[in-house]
Amino acid sequence: MKSSEPDTGHFGVYGGQFVPETLMSPLEELARAYAQSSQDAEFQLELTRLRQHFAGRPTPLFLAQRLSEEVGCKVYLKREDLCHTGAHKINNALGQGLLARQMGKTRLIAETGAGQHGVATATVSALFGLQCEVFMGTEDMQRQALNVVRMELLGARVTPVDSGSRTLKDAINEAMRDWVTNVEDTHYLLGSVLGPHPYPTMVRDFQSVIGREARQQILEYENQLPDLLVACVGGGSNSIGLFHEFLGDDSVRMVGVEAGGKGKQLGEHAARFEGGRVGVLHGTFSYVLQDEQGQVATTHSISAGLDYPSIGPEHAHLRDTGRVQYTSVSDQEALGGFEALSRLEGIIPALESAHAVAYCLKLKEEDGGLTSGDAGSEFPSCLILNLSGRGDKDVEIIRDLRQQ
Image (cartoon, rainbow, N blue to C red):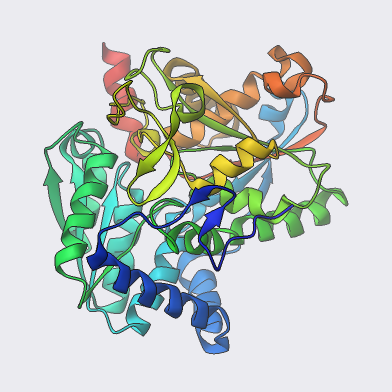
């Protein structure tokens, strides 16, 4: 079962375009350009060349033997942490950067939380000779200071956002305000499967290279598909990038792992499916963490990339249909996953990815090995975990926590 949305921008009831009239024209321009590029052999050849020779694709599928012993089944890691810039974000940035150049734009803007999308956008801007401005909440600038320096070294202007919770939500607000006033020469390189159509579809398609590679690799190694796919979910681009290629395979179960934060109360976590309601945020209709008056709630996660109050509309649809199960792990459990993968496999993961590692470590504790909605399922014999990024950016956070 694959979602059907390209013409309408909807995934079931979710998605759509909820934006000011001034943004309808650039969104239509972008939708046309993306549709054309999908059929343009030269565009696709250039994107493939850049993926291989600039980003370093295909990324390996690594059998993590010591982690497998801890989990109780074969655990393969899809090594997106080995992409140039250190995360899956470069996949989308390269595609949208090519589109921006094709549309004649001379300036890229982006939002960033963990900083990896900002680094990827700054990298592509430098590669194509474009101006670049990245909006980042001041809270995230403090906890991801290394990535701020990286963006600046690449020639980007990093604009602090000091409003609201000073995190990813507020950075998106500022990026959209900038785009409204600079649509002629500027492309907004949105970093996840969020926002108004065509972004959720387009970003998913650029990220689905992850799942296409993983499918080919696991068939080569195991001669069969995996029982389970696991990925962390913030906005949802790394997870849908892995899941999408397998949606039609009923034997493959999928679990998206949200940020459980430090508690169950609103404001203490970023688990949209455990505490959210349907609503509109940043141009799309999906699940949103909000209070009784409909005001967008503050969120918390140890990982800046998961610290966002809404989720991509395709994930909302997949959750409602039951095709993908969603759960959450706490900050402390994510720290345990971070330390376990580092110690067991010599791989330091991003704190975002550590949430997926933590879930896998809990598999044996769960009834049937999956979330509550899947209690009757057999324990997996083989799973793929999407290691969406490396943890260099998070080492100072870990150091400070250890010193407390």
